[in-house]
Amino acid sequence: MQFKDIEGQQVLANRLTEIIDSGRISHAQLFLGPTASGSLALAIAYAQYLGCENRQHYPAGSVLRADSCGECPNCRKYAELVHPDLHLVFPTTTTATVTSRPCAEDFQEEFRGFMQEFRQVGTEDDWYVRLGVENKQGMIREKDADNIIRSLGLKSYEGGYKVLVVWMAERMNVASANTLLKTLEEPEGKTLLMLVSENRDRLLSTIVSRVQQVVVPDLGGGMSAERKAEFAGMFVSWMRLLFKLNMQPLSEWVDKTAGMGREMQKLFLQYVQESLRACFLKTVAGISLKGELDFGDPKFDQSFPAMIAPRNIEQMNEALNEAQYAIERNANAKITFMQLSFKMSRYMKKPAN
Ligand SMILES: [Zn+2]
Image (cartoon, rainbow, N blue to C red):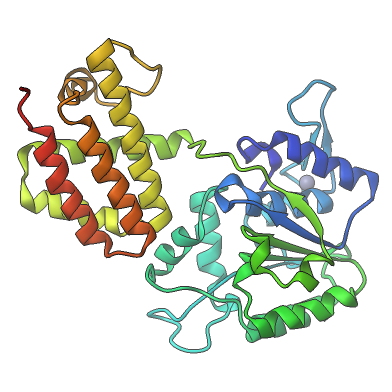
């Protein structure tokens, strides 16, 4: 993971490379911010830069002042997340294949796949969907803490820093948090401990007081182009299905959407709300917001906006709000999306009067 691959966090990336270049490296840090804003990716890019054998520095005025080279042996191992001195810990739960005493070591391969797929934006929900356990809550347990102690006690393979990244550190149970606390009190040699968390209030205050905080700015729904294109595709097929109310494909669409994980579902519903608002503005005022009416399907882009008008926009908005609220409260996603579909279909076809 290089800083150049992380969208929207150049200012922070520059501060981090400056700290490393100056040698003022704190052995315990807390990267605090929404996962979707790149906190985990930044922590990994930081460790990669620290170990890079050929750090690149760019001319003054460049967006990034420096970055890892991406080519040295250290960088290549980091890109694959297989560096022997990098230890990744994250919440886990029992799954179809790991039926008892789960720990992060059991899921290293899956986690690499998850990072490769989502890059900087994968959320905790995305992770559980990937494990096939979207309705369970993972945890970081004593067994993980024991593994942490063991790996930090080992000699580093390559003479550099041993790096431990704990993603979603707020999922540590009391026992694992206390074990980790001991290692924070007595750091060993060249170790770098990076906690990545979305919520400082759910960490032990004794831990928070022992780490240097790196606040990762919330990118506030700044959606990547890939995600936007994915949502646009889902939106177009959904709207067409609602118009025809063709049950078989609609129920397939609902199943697929319900399988996405709660955070992603909420994001999609927000995307739908913004898109409908853009259509409405076009209908009533002829205003076309740049980029918001491009769903990647010229025929749809041309004809759909007229379906959204004063007769239905408010009801649709309300139905979408209710669905978001239901998802936040862990309602059954399939039922929520099916009910929403019926409402939206009815409102869409509502005659003008
Ligand atoms: Zn390198």
